[in-house]
Image (tube, rainbow, N blue to C red; front, side):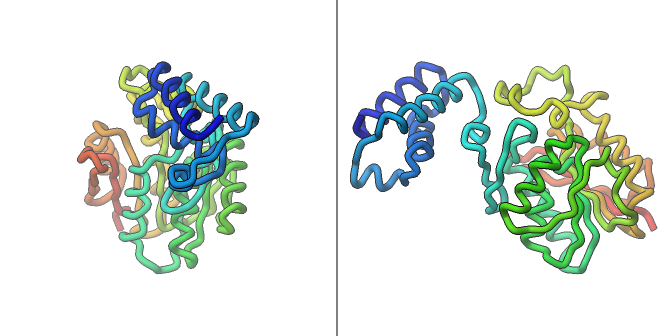
Length: 275
């Protein structure tokens, strides 16, 4: 099958399956299956052998079923780094890059001790490590599968983080200077969840108490782990920042600050421990 035929057939199958932007998705699939850059296909043409086309068709079927592209390829780019991902970890989101940048801007270059709570694939901790080699970094998660994936990503990227299974901060050495967390914050009764999330681990997505249960627990623990004037940085749902600010105000934190995501929603909250 030549390239043009493969592109037409892949696009038609994706469109019939209800995949949005089927032409772009077909490009991604053919690039991935062949290992050949899109520009080379356009410039030089060529053909796909039977085995490569069979692999592309399997990917098409998985996309039509709604499986996230990152799980099909096993990769996701985050903060300029290539991460292995699998169904044991949440797929890193672009808005979380804003949280990473906020932490880098706020903390500067001093040799802080920082913990990524609910590390998942290790995206936050490893992105921080890539820019701050002087920091002591911990990555913790309640899921052993997540810790294993984070460790693998550290090895893959040549970046060192202290990984450990832990229920929030319970096993983290005290004190730390900053806590960073993208914890589960989706209300399990919400009807505004993307269909693709059904492939992601529920423990990384959903939390009781309208999505705030796990975040509340971390905020209660944080004063017992943070150093003097230590800081906490949290990602949250678009309608949760106000409730989190109230929690921080009630638990020895000073002047909580809120930042927005790319869509202008309040999606990050940070605060400093009161001296």
